[in-house]
Image (tube, rainbow, N blue to C red; front, side, top):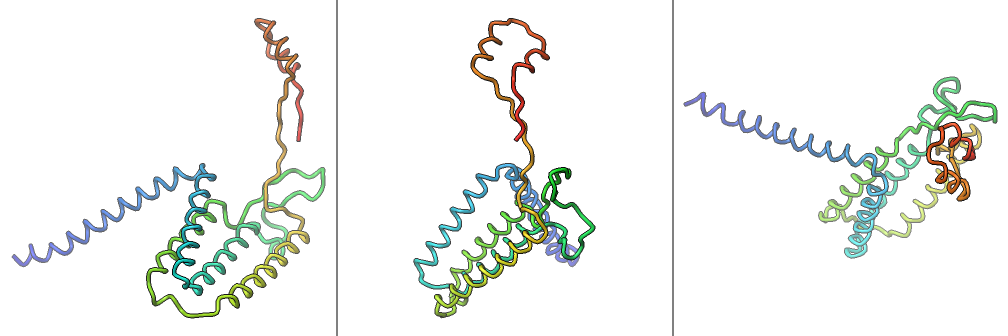
Length: 211
C-alpha cells in the first residue's frame, strides 16, 4: 500500500512532464513551419500590436507596462540593426561588408536574426497583453512624460546607431547582385517558330542583365 501510494505522485509528475514535452515539440514544429512565411508572421504580429493598443486605450491604463515594452522593443531593434561582430571591438575578425567596388560581396550577418527578432516581439506583446488583466501592474503615472522620454531615447539611440553605420561603412540589409534574364516579345515569337533549337541558341536570344 505504501509503495502504491508513493508511486502515485511520481507517476502523475512523469505524465505531466511527458505531456508538457509533447506540447513543446508540437509548438516547436509549427514554429519551424512558419519560418519561411515571414510576411504572414509579421501580419499576425501587427494584428497583435493593434489588439494590445485597443486594450490599453479601452482601459486607459497600464502605461508603465507599455513603457517597459517600448524599451524592450528598442533593445531588440538595436540588436536587429547591429552586425554579429562589432567592428569597434573586434575589427579584424568576422565577416564585413565591402567598402570598394573591387571587394568581394559579403552578406550582412545580424546580431539578432529576423526570426528571433519577430519571435521576441510577438512574445513580448503576448506577455504585455496578459499583464493588462492584472490590476497590480496598473501603476498610476503621467503618460506624456514617459512618451517624451521614450522618444528622446529613441532619437539618441538611433543617432548613435546611424553614426556607427557611417563610421564602419555597413548597411544592415543584404543588397547583393541579382541576375535577370529578359526576352523581348519578338524574340519569344521567333523562338516559337523554331520547333527545336539548341540551348546555346536559346541562351543567346536573351539578354543577361546584372543589377
